[in-house]
Image (cartoon, rainbow, N blue to C red; front, side):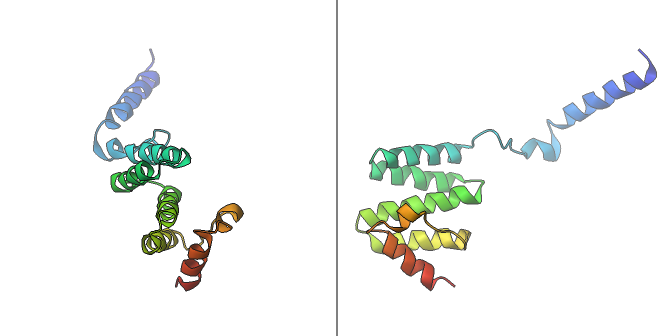
Length: 131
């Protein structure tokens, strides 16, 4: 083996070993779901199944666990708003929509969501009053 190949192999070994410690150790793989992301997925599945109580617990737990992406945090608050609105908790519904708009001031509902008779009007009021 010539000297440059040996040097390259040694350098590669050092780089790989360096990934196990130091600042790169704490970098999360963006392709691996975190516990919070898994909890959010499970919560949205529970919501789709109509199990709003369980969905609310799972989505809140996902937020508590931490969600890396802003879009996931907005989605979590949006669905918590939906759950609160259909459960006749309008104050909490408004608070969740406010949270979503705080995270993303450009947050909007889809046309179907905005047309929902329960949470559509609540969202419009919160959005129109947002700073």
